Image (cartoon, rainbow over the protein chains, first blue to last red):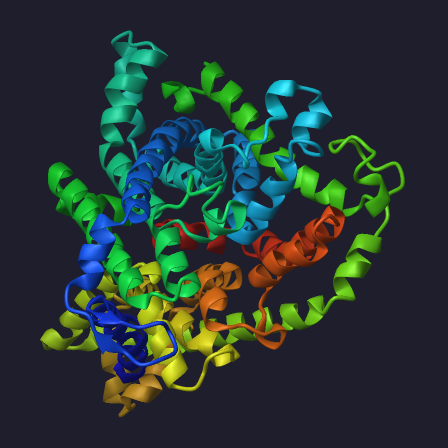
Length: 281
Length: 277
């Protein structure tokens, strides 16, 4: 009875994972013959300034995404854990970005951030009417913001669920002891959310490593190579420059970095406890 | 911030921030909606955030005249087929995991746990190779098969943890009555698992409906184009006709909005159970 699931999953997910390792040692343009390449793709990718820059950009994007999303989601999630009715309404509205496809979000922000016809000109604020997506200095930050727009709702949900699991008595006891709201936040809420923070941050990190569709439609990796992160570099190398071998190297780097990060984060913070915590939330 | 439970002391910082974030969320959505109603010729003249002076549905008309319904139908077929097959094969596998007495079930569960960690991006090149070799390139099946494969691990995990809650005695009494495994699956497991199937089904439908990378790599022609890809090609095709592009965005989101209104609880719990991906 398990056979259909095993076959489908095996053929289209497990086999490709080994396939990508094999393809990293061949030359293939996506259509023609496949020829043995040895370690050529690996050495080429390692010395390619574009790919090295892509790796650096990916690290930068990931760090910026976590720095932006984590505090905002934490703050919103803790707030929305309250039971007041208007907070439930807010939670309903906060969820909306999760319904949009990345393509839809990217198209919307392209129009909204247009220097001549976008929101900047509407509000008549020169500061907002910059060429957001055309300026290599700004584009990456715009990408970070738009990714945040898409995924903060999701992480807010995780924090909301985590906060609701904190026993109420802890707050009541600390109030008896005369603790104020700020003290309570730092001495009860934050420590109690430790495993939620780990889960959410791991997901943010691994997610940031693999963001593709949004950046692809929003900037296509540009201007220049200013937002050409690793997944984009992989796609463009494989399906635009028809160098599947080199692209497979980049895909493998992606898998390895992703696995290393999630294993590392779990190791540092205690994985088994985290799993049982996340199941409940 | 810490006072979310102490209703008598308002959480001012949290509230201020929440309302600010609400504005950040709503502004783009409001912008999509009003711009889709703006006449093309007014787009460059009117204030982009103002309510259109002459609201019109002609942008929607232009979108519908450009094969939008075909792309919509393609998305419906791909999503429905992917979710139906995913649920069917996963509930079968979950039943095996829950009922198996040997290590097979446990190993199957472990494979699923590992499978969740495989990013689509990493497997896309071999998947492309496979689809070309199978002669499926540029067909809807090319989208359905890998979508199912990448939906199975999470679906299996959620269904397994749900099925573990079914009391052993129910299985036993059916077996005493001489029921076959298939009969138990259809008469006992599927009806009991209905809430979990709904949750994970709605969640996977959202994922497949909004998926972009598989369509981008595995299809090419307008005959097989699905919605997210059509939005991207509309952007290229309509170019300066921003109201039409955003009207297409509105139309593409409608089914998911309807699902959210009808099955909000399923969607939200599916997302937290699924933890991203």
